[in-house]
Image 1: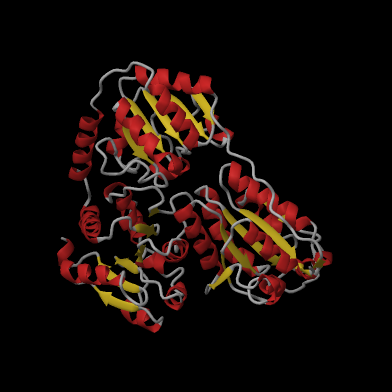
Image 2: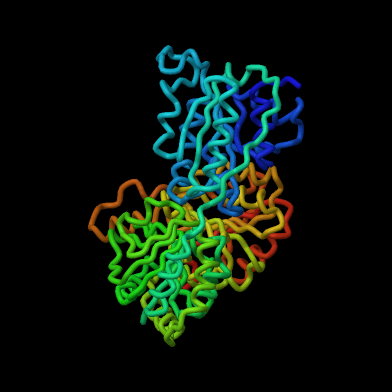
Length: 535
């Protein structure tokens, strides 16, 4: 059975379990498109037309966030790659499995600088710093090996994006053989001796703390049980939010940004950090004061001895490591602690110290928690409402709170929500965006409308780039470039074939938000920060 390399590539992706790709076809991806519509691979993979390649990358990111599975974008060479590069950076920073498949000019032109269409002198070098690996297939036979490398990384290592570039002449090569996926390697298991030592350290602690990152998403039940056995306070990163339910008596949610939580961390005598970088973008301070002994459990060996070196390092996938630790703790005598009382006191202090803006955010977030369907997936942007939501919005399951903290790009929320809804069509998905960030990827409203997604899109309108306005004000810098006018968001939504409304009361917001999940298309709901009902 012969087919072009482009067709064979799509067929191989399907055999690796890919069902959907996001992108915009172009003259340089026509042979890849043969494998998406018509030809011998007809119907195996669904192609979603986006309105910008950045949106395609962010949708692939949303797919990965919602499922933990590989999100795939297929783009043209040159500008398609540079447009999608922001999403690569976001997935690299937040440890998400994304595959970018791109075209490239003919292989004989690479590095020559001849001025061919979409030329980047050597395209893979643009994305190398943003990927686990970036490579160009110089012949069709390279493709199976590169795919095997990418999917082996996704299966067994710290998830990071990969980029495979196919020159147009390589795409057009005829392939006679059937490409098959390789058997994928397993993630590393923990050393029993190290699990036993971790159990002894934790049982002897007087103030144990568990810091949970996105890498622990598969260990939710065991981590919750460990926290209960130890009486340990749980603090999540933004990616780890919901792994231990935010309303669990031991959970402080994703509160490392709060000074109250930062001060408490200095009191911990043993810290169990699981699947977390302990990065600056979770606390937004240069370095947390962690005085206690640190047990780090991470699939990435480089994390064991970086900014916060481990007293005990365990290189392993979180799921088997936490299952083993839970069993080991049952065999080690412990001491009674009152972690729940500590959490209750810290929650109260955080609530007392909210700023005026944070109190308005908290009122809307509390309303959302009351009226949203159980299991709602929240696709958030880098905006003040979501900053507050990191510690104030209760989330009760892993992979249900998206906040692009690692790279802190703007414009993620809407395409992330689209990707999540397409990955999990039966799950309720809601978008939370600021007015400034929403405008970065606003055209993807049309993509959502075209797909008839019943999805509320909440825009927090606070007059532009409010966080930067506040930062300029604090430092006595005259505002510049942060107060541009907004469109009429309701009219804009309607022009993009969506429903739209301004919510001028809690009742109006509730009606619009609940109705959005039953609508025949997306619903844009605009909330103005200074409206009286939020005061």
